[in-house]
Image (cartoon, rainbow, N blue to C red; front, side, top):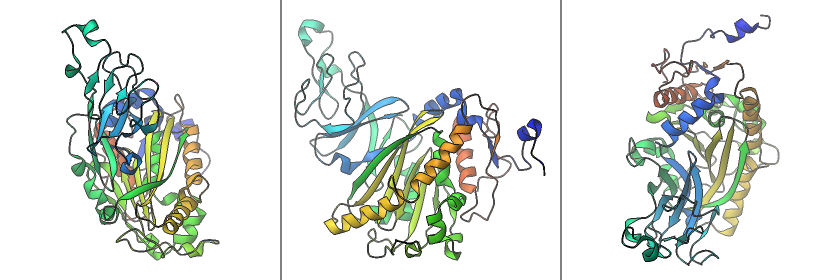
Length: 415
């Protein structure tokens, strides 16, 4: 068939609605702003791991839907989350990405979160404990007991990850939101305390959903030479995509033949507790977080949308906190040889999504992005994509295949 003209290129494909999306959902600035309000401010987001707040007064800062957030471990060992905003004049309280409040900073006292602007201080429960010149300035009209930080819903769960929700009354609890997809690896990641041993982040010129797409389907394993060599066998093709409520998906396991790749060896010597050697489970959580357990190492991707065509991705590698030095080194090598900045797979995924992002900038010609592969929910079926975008349509009340129309159920069910 010859190359298509503009009319043919723009025409709907010969597929059922639900088997493609309109590229404007990746590039339209109005849609992006709406996603922040309707999705990211309403859902549970994993922001870090408890091991990154290992001691009382440790903290980390992040953002969710442009809202600055701080999570801190109190002297009672409880992890809490707050808006990183002073109630006085709206100043960002803590600018460092991570650290400890145990020792005082030039503009603050020990064991206090201090706003450097006017020296207001807060304890690890978010209570205001000091207002500079309180009586002189406010007399009896305002006192520290009547102000404080904006607390956020926060839970530590699913292997020790710290989850935050900006909504005081989320649609469902964290367990209701993400519990069932995690059941496939929960016994392993909850058996012993875990610890982050690797962290790096990247800012990519692509829409956050396109990054999540690479984790929502395995058809792109044709891009990964390592995956083809170590996995293209009957057991690999028998893997299933399993959809869950709220747009989540997990992928069933199989045994990876690492020793088939030159320079690699079997990884059966070390695995996660109660996890079979060389196995691989993957969990994709709506609206765009990913958890991979490859036998000896757990990888977590947490992404922060920065714009329609820009996303920050934080990559964490985790092992068992009680590892011996030898075990930890093995886990690091196993993780980084696949998912580190110079590993076998990660850079190929990033090349793929930046190539997509380059064609879907604001103002680019709308086109159809196809999700129509059906292979009985087996590994190269694009059911994970259909499932995800149907959920996206519900939250946004937009039709993924024509985002200027209101959502209606797809002609092809998102199995």
